[in-house]
Length: 133
Image 1: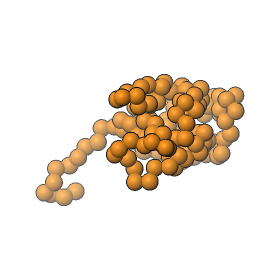
Image 2: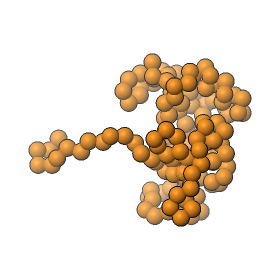
Image 3: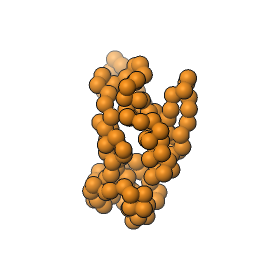
């Protein structure tokens, strides 16, 4: 930490953005598979709400400004912590026709060891669902 600058204290993640080919398809997947709710905000923009966070969706053909330097569908890779057991998550994913890429496998979370399963959304984004051990 630099003595001349005040420390910045981050409280939590508020939202992040993924670029998708089809807003409706993304909303259907995230609602059916992960229980996220579609919300509209700021002049017709779309997000997926869960807990106290959200995922903003940017359409690939018309991304909003400002944006990532090279936004493309399928470039996201994120981890979601669930209170649901991974066994139940795996059963639910299979019932939704979602293929598990890897797991359950031990990994390192932000505050300790986690057990995770990995799968992809319709755009190819990698989703890690985890339980703290």
